[in-house]
Length: 473
Image 1 (cartoon, rainbow, N blue to C red):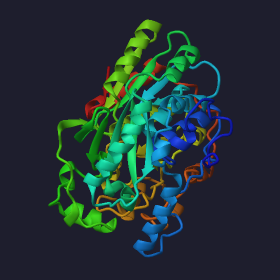
Image 2 (tube, rainbow, N blue to C red):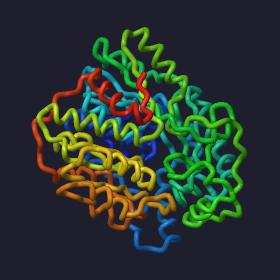
Image 3 (tube, one colour):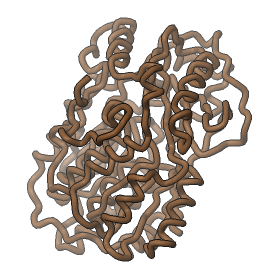
């Protein structure tokens, strides 16, 4: 199979195992963020990131046909059981670092995926390295309403992965609310490093300026977990679904809605028992990796700062406030806002246009409510552009278009909801490059501000985020 659309030629590292662009799930957070930040550090936008989800062409078709089309598309890119055994996490780490331009950097961001990390990286002139990566694997004869069967199938795959990658922890997520019918044809696995990969160590040692800081971003959300085996854990649902853990209980009305929309039956739902107290959700940072970073920085003479956020909206708001102050210090207005969502972001075009970015993790009501609250408490913006990413599934937790329109309504003069993303919402998918197309139409606001100094950035983030739970230590 050739490189995924949107990948850059020549980035596949030499060595055994599958290439990184074959292993890391297409459209996953880590993959999109590294690609976007690497382009921004080259003074390039994301116009070539053209991934489209599996339901993009089936908005008007009946749900069974749309689900079948999505399953076929997902099957073409999912890993087989044999390929799971060929995954080399070290090669994946090399694939990530090899995407960044050569040269020395004033620091590095590392940790949980978050769109705000892309904008923070752009403002600081730094790369970002993910603490893990997502994969999807085939689940023959799977069923969206059978979490126990998903666990059994995932355990075999995790065993193959861990046999060749003992430095990983594999978190399996079975979430029909966020994945829809795809949760019944593929299993979702998030591999998290339990120590610093060799490629990361080399990158830090060879590409950081003397005394450059390392900033570790930690998503502190928790979720009930079933410890399936050493190195493999399982969770039903996820924070990004917009639902609570109790909503995945067999008696939940919300669960019955979710399963019906995904083509399942709530009568068959029997999740495995929770065998451990709530633990870091799938995008958390493994304690071993956090410890390894602190040990490496202590030996190498680099300061380290940890940024822990209790929810994605906390970091999103703090980064937006940071951008407004940064832009105004450079003589710009800081009065034009773009609300991004999911994969729809472009950090280079945001800075080129002199805009303030606020990133929503996805299109759930909870995330949209949070941006509304932040806007209500912020100094008004002259213009507000909104890019709601259609999730490609139906769920009772999703925001409707009227709620997104209410966000745009905070603009005093310009109130824009992108029509291309709204068309067919929520069951269509739009390419990542759609954000670039929208932002390219914004007027230029050059020159771009000089990069932020880390102490100034941390001070602003602390002042803005600490009252809302952002912890910087």
